[in-house]
Length: 367
Image (cartoon, rainbow, N blue to C red):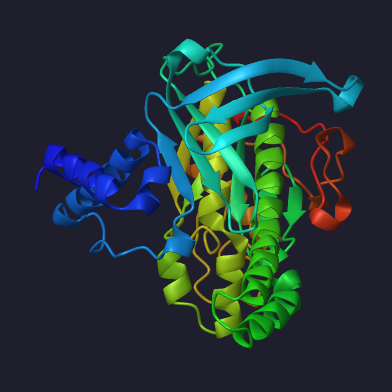
């Protein structure tokens, strides 16, 4: 069946089944569109075979063109507590009060997606059709920073600063295990099962939000100070699969290297700045001073000692400097020791979240 036939089938099923009649007609057609897209991705080799989704896992509705209306847009509160609220009407469902985080032209909204998160939070996403405006580069880049990712220190910067790994999942693991055991004792889909499921989802969501908050604030700090981001091109999935121990594989997963790279790149691209992905091969074993390779360096060694020239430096700092060197940037000075990134109240970071980021750092000159 093609896309048009699937959409018509969805409408026919909606007429026959009273339960489906509580949905707006275009919402029912959008369900058929999702199935068609999933099938096309499967046939194209981009995804696995589509599976039937259970009712309690279907957590979003899409209004493509009509069936919704915004009204009573107003500002409430004073000072830092000032918010913009509105009333949203969804056909066949009713009215909702929204807290609007952005101002957008209602006439250009092409889609409204209502998403219920497993934790119970509801987000309404408005898709606006307009040209994306990214920041424009002010000219020739003048400053660059190399970022080496690791397990003990989440990020080591080439200017000598480092961000400790907060390990959010590891710290929440005991609480998660208790909730998982409690959930396994509840009757499936009972009220107590749903309550425990929501508590577990909130715990996982807290871990996810903590990571994203830290990554975005680190991205803001670096993009405001530097013109070029040099980051290692890691095969994260390969690192997890080749992990020597179960604990190491777990910490690789908890560190979310792909997530931090994606957010750092987005912050720099949004500001019209440059991102350079450099091969991560032997960055920890290569000497920044002479370029020699220390083949005897193990994971337990935290100090890099070059067997060729005798150059000694902290291992992660050496790796971040090697990243800069491979991208043809030269630091104007050699950091003597690592400095933890201090808390940054203006960005709302807390010390228990892994510390935050502000300190003047010397620029890097193009070599």
